[in-house]
Image 1 (cartoon, helix red, strand yellow):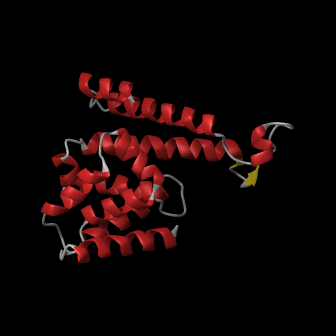
Image 2 (cartoon, helix red, strand yellow):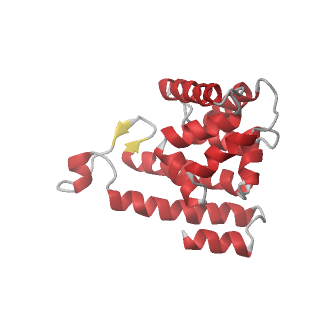
Length: 196
């Protein structure tokens, strides 16, 4: 993941340079969208298109000069708190959603996306991925579990498309549960989640 994170940061710097701007967390968000399928799917699930993110680069908000470094450090801490050794793109966008003073967070708000809802959705995805990982591997010994003989999963060694589609549905349900437990689920967000 270090290489993927490095390439994301490089892409963010290229996006900023191309627009004659200083790199910001909004550039990181766009680079993550363009480079990671999970980030792209979460954004699309919440109604954020690439074109809207690119337009948000036209008015990048002022933030601390070390905002990107702080976001990456927070992502590392989030990954560690979730028991993951390597930082994934979902950890980075979760860190961006949780930092109210960063440009990416402000951009999400300007696009009509609640950073809390965005963060809850990311967290639900991370939890679901952890459950899927735990179901495929014997977590204490980190060995693959023995799939049932003759199963499709036994032949492939990974989840099928239908299993992943089910996981996406469970992630939306988990996001609703997280928001509801925090008292942040409104009728509007409930309807939005149900529509997805």
